[in-house]
Length: 429
Image (cartoon, rainbow, N blue to C red; front, side, top):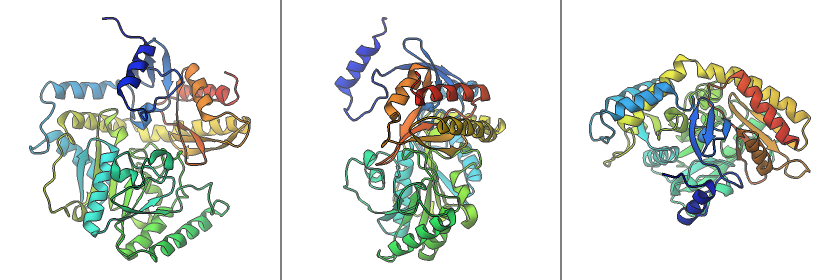
């Protein structure tokens, strides 16, 4: 059978899919296969992947251990639902509960990070009998109706209607806003004072604060270490739960920690932790971890048809085992540290780069949109033309290149990608 041309596939895409379903590149590409840190398009072009399907291909494309686990499980049974005992689900839940740092933890599996955050909101509002939620400015938590209602980024929030009353808190963006000029300690103090002031104006029964330790779609921005620990002390005074959205920061990607919340660990772990993306290495897995008292608060029936399916759980187990056995957190710390320093050196000599920030293999390059330097779209196009795939993000007044390769990235590949980014930022290609 003849493979349709890329242009034809693009036309068909526009004919049957929503206008708001965005595609990268002026001339979109169809990725057909991958191996390691590389992917190929339908025309045979090879790319170094520095975005991993939005931080989802966590270990490597076509990782043999994962593909073998999926194939073997598929040959036995693909689906059963949560109405039956499921050995792979129990085994993965045991490992995730132990790794979470949450005492007496229970785990519920979903099919995406959006659904995981929905579940966390359901648990928090049911447990606290309140629909008031604190969220961070510049945040993103998914595309469902309730998740959009707590998203503090207008580019990803298509409606102001919501079942929740959301109050937005300062602190998620260190380099912008009214507290940007302060020292880290003063920044934390000001944000805590703002939180106390806000809580003094509510009914007093706020359900939870939900926060990404490093904001993903918002452009890989984060507060000083310890901010959420300081928030946690205030939240405890009011009985308010802390939800850590680890959909992008989990599994050691930041290098320094296995979970993003551990940079704010002085006041203990969160009450609820959500995860997704990387654990499945491309398979559709999300989930929620919560202490038993919170997880078990629902007084109505609930199941998941597809969450925790045998085939995705088998993939997750194999992927997590590979990550731990090969110390990919350590690799993210070492190779990511080298890459960040290389990119900072490049930025020093490139026009229009405001900041290079991040941790491990979660790096953002913020461009100065007010100056004469390159815009994000042009840089992304230039990188693609040179064989490198990267992402983009940012808030209402920022434009950020997002770099998050598979965590098996080598030093040579990091250097190759940095060289391409250097030429793209300087307008040399």
